[in-house]
Image (cartoon, helix red, strand yellow):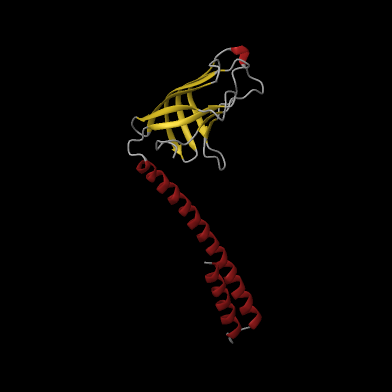
Length: 194
């Protein structure tokens, strides 16, 4: 496309230079103004084409997702940073209807005292966003005076930047202050996140 713009510019300049009608300087100014206008139009077209291409690629990816796992059911790693990123727990997902999946699972510490539990339904809103509705329960003995922290209702998980995992956006621990919980769901064997 850039080569086309350059060729058009050269053609307009050549035409302007060989034109014997009227003032040579005025013709060059008019040709230059026309080239700038054409260049701006081509830039807008290129930008629109890129936006359209990006949207089409995202739609193709979304359509292709179910083909990876026809049933949609599967297992995904899940972690709470207070327990471990290296030893994840797992959630099982089963398709419902209208793009929703049931999600049920947990992560437990090695000593069995700390845990993360999730139970509800979840759906993919976009390539970077999941909507969850249900209950997320955490118990970490060193947080919230060792009491259970429960988050209920609608929650959002996002995959920001180049991340391949989805992080719960309601990060504030029930203890409050600056204490946050990183609840992360990772790609697995279902079509939900892959």
